[in-house]
Image (cartoon, rainbow, N blue to C red; front, side, top):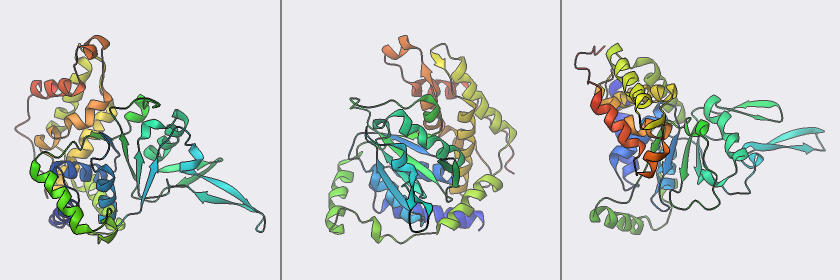
Length: 323
């Protein structure tokens, strides 16, 4: 698979997803970049905006298995990991696999489950493996988590710890339909589908194994010049040096910008990263890794403004090698 073929496949994936999901095409490309970079995505948005539809459409388009877990206050770690059951006839324990044994996991309203259940995801998100009763099981590749949380209703919720927030490659928002035409398109497509869930009729553009090859191309075939690396590092460091910031972006934020910018280069059929590839992801990759000082939070300042200020202050490299 060469870069031109990879670009065509990405275009087909985006076109197929947008034929069902009505929304911002750039958002779809960002989600695709996240999964190509082998990362996880956190959606913070109101209910009913198509997050589940987007996740299911993506998973079936790339020929991957899909599981959805509704996180609730009574959800236990075993409910998502699985449990070992004693089989009397075989005189042995058998693993009853939980929904985490999948390619794409939609963790719906992840902040509604208690911290013990949330922490059960950490090993899977970082090491792509889980441990049940002392035995470790490798998860099938590709594996990534698309999680959602409701930004309005906080009663009965448990805020995600910073360690878990930091493991999400991007924090995105689908938002409401931007135009009246989009709103009408949602209704018209529902009429043409004649059912609520059209994703099962989707034919995969590629297989999960081919998608894993594309992930390897992002990792091995996309060049990043030293001036681009310096540009990424300088943006991240500016978030730590700002007087309005209590905790700046972690080194994992630096790696998030590096990974997503390489994936965006692949989507455009390039074998090198440009400054625009970096800038397009800066707020999405860093905003959830920053903690503002309390006094500035009370004044209404948000992390995205800090990142936008950092981008404006750091000179854009104009002389960089293109492979």
